[in-house]
Length: 547
Image 1 (cartoon, rainbow, N blue to C red):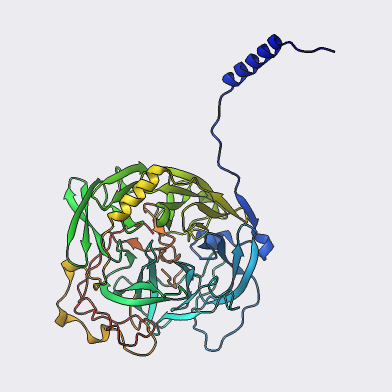
Image 2 (cartoon, rainbow, N blue to C red):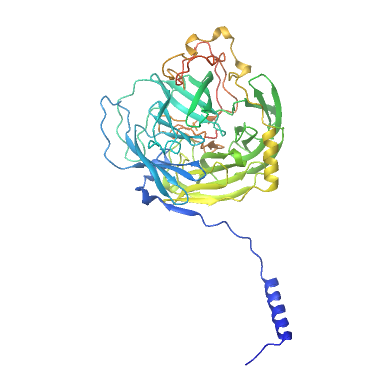
């Protein structure tokens, strides 16, 4: 029997060391995602043409770190309702509450909807906003699970005289912006299109848009969310509004393709922020109370540049967005200092506001960014491609990304925050403008108090409703209008899939700020109120939008 000598063992050990030294060390790739097939829940394939033309047919939202809410259109008999409007486009949608990582179904329900526009928004903290026609209700599936009523709905905002055009929820889920137009009698019911959703008339450019602002407050036990009316303005068009509960961003043209951002507090203070070079008017959007991003152009009018900014007046980073795309949309995780940007990538450039075919689309990509550095943490693809951009979401902590891919939910773990990320996040949070409960208004265009219409004040009793007002927005129009030149729109600030609004780089002109009822008065559920359109100034909105 051969017994190796110590010298042989030494040679063998040295040989292995040489082999290891010669072997390149490769960085470990991303972990394989947790995969949950949708067919396990009765999901049926959806029409690509409906998805590409802006119909909201599939949504994916985190309830908390360990639960997902999944909704999708189902094919089943639709009950007939008496006195249905001529322009109804009825469909059934299933909603499922899932436990992670087991994919166990904890609750399920169905909703009867009447159009193809966006119907669901995440209000944060486990609460959701549901739109049926022009009525909004809220539900908290996890909070009400133990009571056996996970999808119990609570009245929120309703309207009998106005049609919802856009709903926008701030990244921190504390501000709701409702844009509406006056309701008109429906035209004769059009014939159903062979492909894609039935076209409906767009809002007339002559129709004034009323924009109502509501601060959102959770109850002490976090079982409900209440909207507190904070002001209203009249505008000539719909669009994204870079506003928070503390103030709004304004774009200042300094000439020669140089721009600057100013933050206007509702208390009247103005902070001058970082400049930004762009060959088109930039479109800023808040990603948290203390940071925002802006989309701009580098030669021409196509928005293919993105930059990150803080409230200390610094531009933190800037990078290009390559390739032709449409329908940008965003998901936010302010607690983790991260956001996700989705884009529908095209093989060739497309004409804005036009429907597209499957042959024109190459993919839908989602990139997760660290807000403070601009570092790209993860790149993932979604399929089927959904122009409405509701098929992905970030977990509240920003440590996981969920996407719909190949008829399954895929959940990716994201790298933890580095010590520098944590330091940057704390610094950013300390520089956030102080919140206030002042009326939301845009001082440069504010009207005098005598110009306000008495009807614009919230009622002191009865249900809140917006009897005559205007993303990311529940409209009842299914014609896509996102732009291949756009920047991005938020999952939390989504525009209606069929009427993607242009971003509002400068806030709309305002009428007299409207005060909240005193705390000791009974506050009914919110409503949208009519403002005096003959007294309120108006302004045009830019045409180069993020959605």
